[in-house]
Length: 537
Ligand code: GLN
Image 1 (cartoon, rainbow, N blue to C red):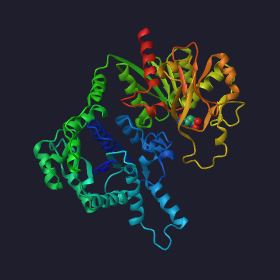
Image 2: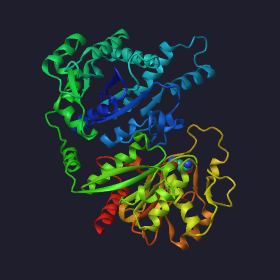
Image 3: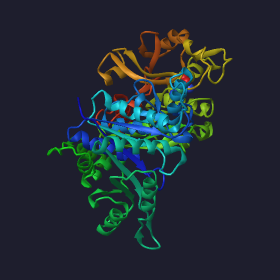
């Protein structure tokens, strides 16, 4: 049984400083020193999970193996640490209150007034400790969403205050702040950091380590000033300089000795050796690509890159595996029409049609797929992207002019994509899709089998609609084959086109499983196909 240590990561001054990347980088370094680590995100908003939010709010919704719809930071945790997360790794205020209120209704607190302290804070602490309870982890890193001082984050900071008090040196608090450079003054300013630490102190929490996000290097005098005003040792003032890639951050944190500080603060013996060679090898290839391809990412949220976070990262991993830089050209599906097809798609080496919900931009996606199919351009369709490929094939190859998904047109005469039978009775929208990991059996005579090298695979899902099996024979005969099936319910999970260099549609989300250590085979294969397409000229 391990003596689990708890590390908290809070943020100050502004949001978007990269708490998720700092947490992930710390996890990577601790892992490289032989420790087992998991990372958790506590989100102060009232939604029970981010599954019902649109991507404009907090970016992509990340799905775990066990089917939790979670914050996109969990994607970073998995990509860096290569350890799967679960429902327990993302907890919102909504989930905490829902649990406590349900217990109150069941009579568990009979006779007492249910209050933020202790009932809500106890539940927060229980959720944090839960991850350490089974003794699997040396470190549980808990990132608190938002910024200190936000009304919503008070109970979380209070829970940290209590845990520090209860656990002493088995806990450490890292506070991430911004040290801005004022060009008019020509210097870095520490005042926002001082104020932010004061806010934390007002809530009873003294940070052990301060990570300073900055666009310029911190000199000794700035470090000294922050140490003095914020009651931390000067070695605990860590610089986090803007990096060209998030994957550089673990190396920057290694240089700044963030991991050593954490080990020191938690009274943990510091292992002499650190093995980070695989990560360095990845970076070496990332920074020295031999090739470059351009992929069109066709979707309706392209103005917001975070909406397709995991897809972007999976392209980086798949690119590195091919020594290839993948340039992503974002194409707004609402802007794709016959007139602009060439303008958007004639200069790309491959086309990916993104996942999504609802009808906005759907015809643009279908046109882009027709373009890929008829011009022999490598195509990768994910979830809605696969469904659109089925619709396009139905309309333009099989002559089913009204082929559609019943999501967009419930009355279509040719519902080639239809609601799953067990979804028909669903009334509540939160957490009710087909979510998480399901097995899929591959046809050994397929392109995807050559990439996975195994017959039974498992991938994560998030959808309500599926390929309509009534059309399977007709499609197969015409050259669109179902090459991956969920055996228990005979659901089509993968389609491939014959007589095309690379045309693959998947009902699941391969992007969620791609990590630095294990780039996803389908992204590796797609990049390779794009490269071949480009080299062929
Ligand atoms: N809207 C489609 C469905 O629910 C596709 C979902 C997705 O792309 N994640 O089946």
